[in-house]
Length: 187
Image (cartoon, rainbow, N blue to C red; front, side):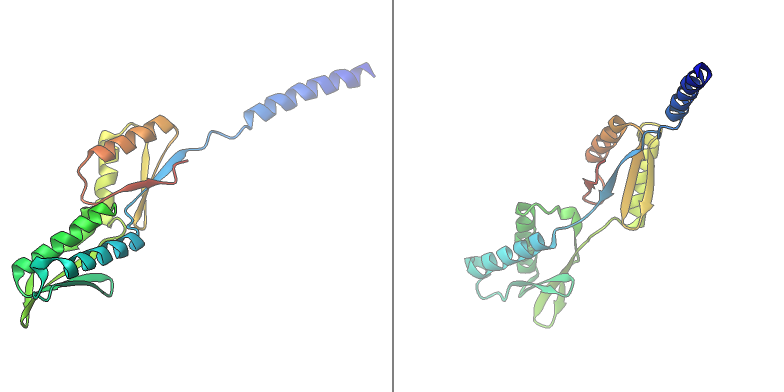
């Protein structure tokens, strides 16, 4: 009987040591770097710009308008200067709605019959070349042990240390990037 009690103590100790060795390693913390535009806010900004253009005295009789044309925004006016002024009104409404102008790509005014037009698109997602630039910044200037991987139009940044991830977020916020970035899924 004593042998079985000693054997269970020994096996219990071995079991505990084995359990300690098998504890899962601490999982990497991560976050995603994305460039997303809230399309409802863009729609609201366009409607506000349209209302202001309809009511402002300096736009009366110029045929000035701003409207969706598929996925892009079409700005029309009778002169090139009025078209640029309409674009300026639209940009100010985007800023008020919290949308960065880095996500708006506008072309130059071009003549179309008797009116001038500007076609603007709202960029959504990080292009592969911008993702590579951000990844290079993280590799070169960030702490060691931080990994960045490109998945579609997002960039996943992971590290064992949450402090390193916080420093990466601060680093990217301090950089003047070509895209407006947001940080999501921080875990």
